[in-house]
Image 1: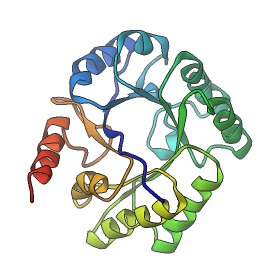
Image 2: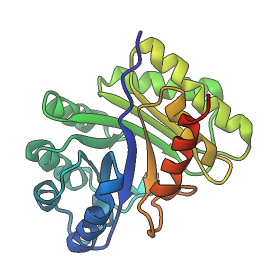
Image 3: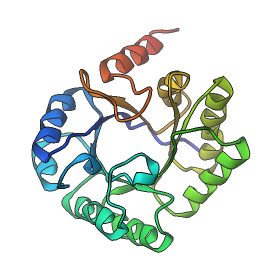
Length: 232
């Protein structure tokens, strides 16, 4: 089955307040194909100011503490801004696979036809076995979310190869997949994933600290991708 066209580079933006985050997003939008707004970094999460001010497709994430975020422990409170994002015209929302099953499926259903749900799974410590990764991918596919996301911490090149190899199965399923590795060893996978059919990759805004280990500045990542395009 033909793989869906890549969405390109998503620039992840975070800040302590809406104004601070919006300022960073406005500065980053010229270099971004998509901007991820990390709601969990804000003292009080809000969606509409970003929808009103930004011209690029927006992805809203309210990351759970169990996956490296600062969102509230209460699932109802954590997911509420994502419902607002769906209703307000967001292009994407990111929802963790580990979210309570019933709450997860309710939000996926609410988003269908309005915005695309990325069903995500992160491991900031290690990379599972090939079988473990395939099981995660299959679980994501069965949720009926629009896009999968699997991101792990790489400690050697075999970790990177296992994660990138998920694109073969995702292609067979016809399931758009974001898959790469964090950490120094995983940096190469942030560019390679697009060359292997990955739906999207992530970068930090220039001059800003990344939201995950090994996240390149968007200008650096674009330079790498341009150089790849120049190779015969």
